[in-house]
Length: 104
Image 1 (cartoon, rainbow, N blue to C red):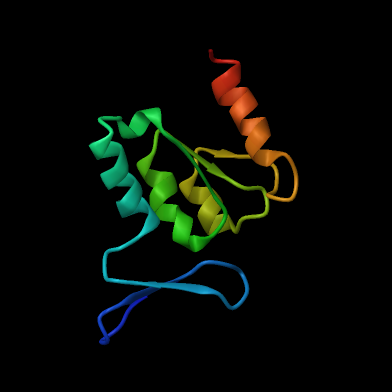
Image 2: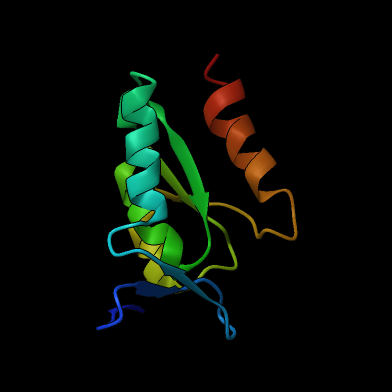
């Protein structure tokens, strides 16, 4: 869920419960990550991002390898290139082992 209000801020759900992110319009994890990697002279294709909520979808679509956590909703998984274990397990370590450490 993303909503822009008449009060000059954006809202996006950041959990399956009752938490939302409230930010200036256009301020998102995806936009901040895009600015950071541009400043670092890194290509988006060289970046891995992990996410599990609606506020992560833009970021997962931006990078070369978007990894959704196993406990994420189907909409988040659809934005990702890979689905790993849950954030209560070794999901991030498993993905890093598979895509970074074995590729080196």
